[in-house]
Length: 386
Image 1 (tube, one colour):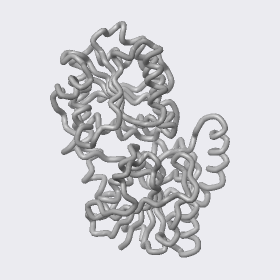
Image 2 (spheres, helix red, strand yellow):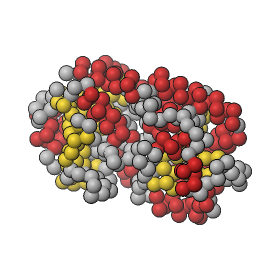
Image 3 (cartoon, one colour):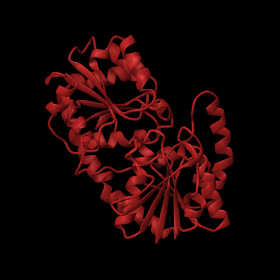
Image 4 (tube, one colour):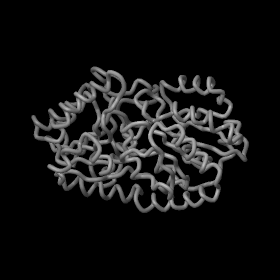
């Protein structure tokens, strides 16, 4: 069986949608499927990223966009590739190329499954464009899809899909994101990481992991910097490490200087897959202060939990399904600087609480979010859609 994954971003681009697509592709390949990933050649990629390659049995085709804006793209040559498929797996949203997927479904009667990652929300004029776009496109998606995966039913019930959950309940399945708990493990603080950023070994570390580009405006980095400017005077041994890259990084660096926290705010950039668990090991608290429903899950949360780290996240649909408030982390009201500061301060001040939450966090990941368990469910549902 030939499966074609259609996705707006894919590694080495850092982001949850691309990570999930890569996991799905390799899950299907290990299950014996012939897998192609069709994704745009992203402008941020260096010369070492090629347009056509095999990665552990998965055929990656990075197609040149005919038109593109941000992560939206109409990919050249996508339609002929889709004609080869037995089943197409579309990762929504993918403005531009998802219309080609719908066309393939209607014209060639292709079997389509969809992973609905998040609502299109946006800011400014994009908010109105995304609202209109969703009104037009979502009915088409629901019409052509054999099945729709959602990362949590909690998010789906509060998303633009909610009206379809009652009328077409049988076509929806909850399939959470997953993490390799054999890679993301509890560990001791890595002195090499700390010394690289000139951080003393006895310091407390707040860690943020996420995209710093405009497509990830909703991650709440600016809010986190403001909160740290209030938190650092109270906790003189606390540092913030920000892992991630993007076109907003310089703005955030400038903000940290203007707030007077640049010496204790460390921008690590895009780190390798091998190093990322080491950064989690250095953390005392991890945070995901996302500000709106563009955040539907938060892979960084389950990576942190797998490493036995308590988390502070916002009480958003989907996100709150990952974090059990008071058990393995704390939930705060979105965009509330006061609540975010208080929650971070609480965890930074209480070593026993952090340790207790860390144990609960690791146990939860092993029971609910392991790659093997989620992979079996994905393949079972995918094959039943044929």
